[in-house]
Structure formats: structure tokens, C-alpha cells
Length: 405
Image (cartoon, rainbow, N blue to C red; front, side, top):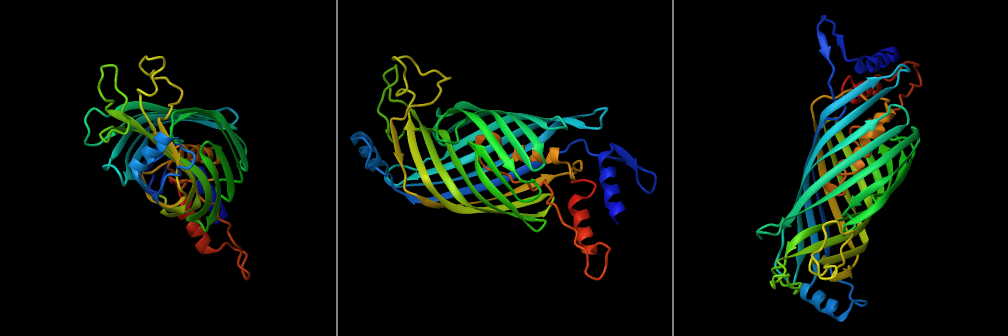
């Protein structure tokens, strides 16, 4: 039976072979599946912490009233090109090109003003190079458009990007260095990307990724994971100035028609991932946000020396910013993977590729599709009365890691 398992792994790595009837079997081109995902996030109603605010900020906080926030994100990614090379020493390098897209509906609710539904649409591309040895390069470009639904002329274009180098020293340790232009902290920021992981991705591991967060992940059987995490979540979206929150005027003497809504929640919580099959993953998260903030920005307020604000401004200066009370949050979601892919069983380089891809969400939305495409290592137990492998364990292993993922 051990020989059968070993042979199945070898069989999955060749480009084509023959089945028992002599017919040629074509191996899938890609390691990534076409992936669809959806998640929802909501945090409780809270008040602004106004004790250290300026008088005009206190007045605006009173006008806004209590604050509550929820959002939903739907997205996809799919491989459109995979290029692989087998070197003379037997190592295999590959390029993975993915098209990405996401749609986010953000629903900030203030008790003192009208409701606003803010949309964010992103279409992007990412390239991942796996050297097949210890190095991995990741490049993501995520331009997006955001605006206030029902308010014409409020949509604006921005872009986020991440470039990093990942060094997998061993299956039990890797580190990452790079650069990210991100909005997940509630402003436009240019930051270094620094991270490391301790522990194997198919077992228990701890990951620290700045500015993405920290996570301790523990497998529960072969189909589930329990996670203890902390991470930031936030965005910078365009909102109509229909409530006259900012009274600055444009160069043409008109009231500024838009403002920029920025939010930040620092989350601490628990996450449970369940993978009923290799095609479907489910998760639920809950916990508390203890470090929170909200900011409102205006292009007119950011005029440098009376000139129009430059599109490459490093970060925006808010005309209103305030901390928020701590509140509990709830998040849940589903990921669906379509079609067959190449086997990755015991391929720790590809595990690292998958983990890097899931850590950095398409569209700079700071959600996580999970690592359901990384098989959890299963220890095959010996029977007390027999020395041959437990039939059920072998069956589960073949089902989880069969010829294709």
C-alpha cells in the first residue's frame, strides 16, 4: 500500500501517462484552480472617543452620531498562464500568472446623517515565480475604482500593489521582505513588507506578516483548522459630500462634491476553517476590535500651496479623525475552487506559493480565502494488533491528495 501511495505521487507529476486501457491521460496545465470567494464582515455600533478632539471635530462627531460598519466582498482569481521548467538537477521552477477581481460593498452607518453605500471594484493581475529551490517572487497590481452608489460623479480611481521576495529556508521556516502600497490602515500608505513563518504549512505554524497581521494556525484533523489571529482591516473609499460634512470650496467656487472615507479596525480573534472537500472551504471569525479609528479627507483640504492635490500624494491629511470605542465583530465566508489542478502533495515550494497568494487578498481588501488547497499532513497510525496501515487512513489520504487537487 505504501508503494501505491508513492507511485500515485510520481504519476501526478508527469505531463501525460497511460491508464489501464492504454488511453493517454492529459495532466492539467495549472497548479491554481479558478477560485470564487465571498465573505461578510460586521462590527457593532459604537461612539466616537471625543475627549482629545478639537472643538470643530467634536461638533462634527456630534453631527455624525453613532457609527456602525458592515461590508461584503465577492471576488475571483484564475490562472491564465503557467510556465514550468525542469532543470538538470531535477528541480522544477514555474511562473504563475493570475487574473484577479473583486467587488466590495461597504455600508457605513451614522445615526446623524443619511445612509451611504460605497462600492469598490478592482481588476488586477499578479505574477508568482517559484524558483523550485528556496526563492519565490510575488508581484501584485490591484487598480480599483470606488464611489458612492446613487451619487453620480463620485467615482475615483486608485491602485494598490505589493512586491515581495519570499525565502523558504526550510519547510519549517521562511521569511519575506518587500514593499506594499496599501489602504488597509485607512489611508494611502507606502510601507515595507516584512514577515516570517515558523512551522510547516501543512501542520501547526505561526506567521507574522507586517502590515498584514499575525496568525497561529493549528490543524484539527485533515479537514479543519483553528486559528488565533490579529490583523488590521480597513479601506479608503470615496463618498458623496451630500451631508455637507466638509464646507471647503473648489477652485471654481463650488462646494466639494466628494469626501474620502477612511476606516481602520485592529482585530483580535478566533477563526475556524472547514474544508469539506478540495473544492469548497468555509470559515467563520469572531473577536474584538480594540484599536479603531475613522477619518474623513477632502481633496480641497489637501491642497498644497493652493494648487490641486497631486495624484501621487504619499498620504492624505484628514479634516476629521477620531478613535472609536472597542466592539465585537463577526465575519464568515466561502471559497469555491473549480476544475482539476496539478498535484502538490509534499511540494512545500507550492505550499509557500499558495500561502503567499492567500495572505495578500486581491483588491487590497485584507480578506483571506484560506489555505484549503494546502493538504494537511496525516499521520498514518499503526494498529495495535497489525503492522499494516489502517485502511481508513489510507483511503482518506488518497481522497485528500489524489492524482489531482
